[in-house]
Length: 504
Ligand code: CA
View 1 (cartoon, helix red, strand yellow):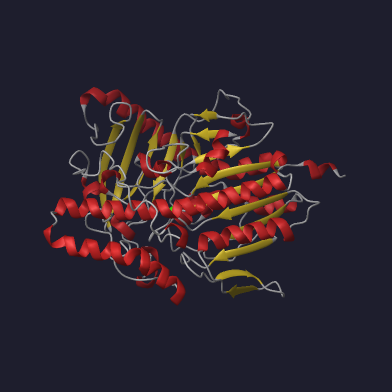
View 2 (tube, rainbow, N blue to C red):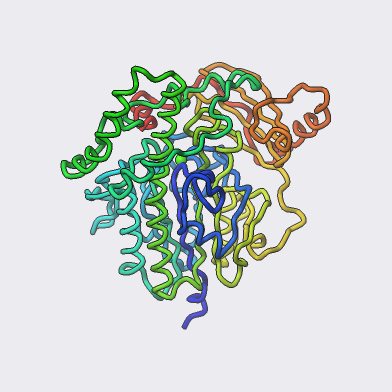
């Protein structure tokens, strides 16, 4: 056997918009996710994995390249990823790895650097998704699929692992779910699951944004005002076929009827509470199918004797608001959307049931994959390999502060453009453009005293030293990562057609 055959395989399991609050290895109060928890209990749970730009496409582009959005060119949804640039799958492929990506891609351009791809077109629907793959002539073709998208992505991943990969080569597969992205349509198995329970409300569900600058109150992502009838399953079947509609209607029809009958007598508060329950339960139902799929893949790795030499990594493209601050969605540098889950199982290297509090990031994934495979890491990647942390080491020079940058305004949910720095204890944020106009709002949070980030202490004389230090840190990081000066805030992000796609 050639020595290269011993290199570890990589299974990268990825979801869209899955937060720690809905993953029981982090937070068991709302859902049990026993299969995802297996990765944590047999490996390492990272408690501070921050994303550089909390939104779907940009996060994926960061993972492909190991570079911040301003360098990989994909700053906001609606951009088209330049697949001609250097990416980690290309480097793995060149080093003899077999590479595959299945499921959500969301980078607009055709995947490059993959021996096999079978990906959703754009956002992709929850039922009966058309998917893009290479046809017999190698050119991309769209093929129809029937069923629930989460299950289809799992089936296709398993089919590739079982039948299509070359067993003589190490492999890297990206198994990437659409779920639990908006509009949170559960699979047939879980349409009535959780009907008989009440999900606890977060402390900050009734946040009035009075302790922060204007941006927090000018967004449009509240459970109170911004969930539409399709989000709430009061209308619409998406792309379901007639049989699927019948199953759906049998589950949601009676629930909706009861609500519509009661609604004239409900207070505004009660209506928000109802919307919260409907929204969070549908979200959790979507997560449940993901967890089932992860279980099937882990079981297969066991059955095939692959588990011992396969690194299994679980993450999401960003965190999410499950009602915190009254919100759904992501985008902000506030904790819930800055953080994303990260679990890693690597038998023989990662000790079981370990946790890690170092500041790590999706910026580090590309370098980590290359390091696992023993491939040289290019100098122009901007992250750090996580391998030393996985080996249980505590590198003295590990990053102590993290730079964040969000660009999509004007854009969906009207979150101001902002950038900032956090060291885990304090966070400094600069909101610099809103609704096409320059703004100049600063927020500073003391994360130990105010973990919910309800009151900015920017300008408070008690924090003058901290504020000055954080400003210095921010300037240093912007220089280090080669961030250009603030771009023109009036430049439109996307056309009308694209806005429609983003809302879905
Ligand atoms: Ca996302």
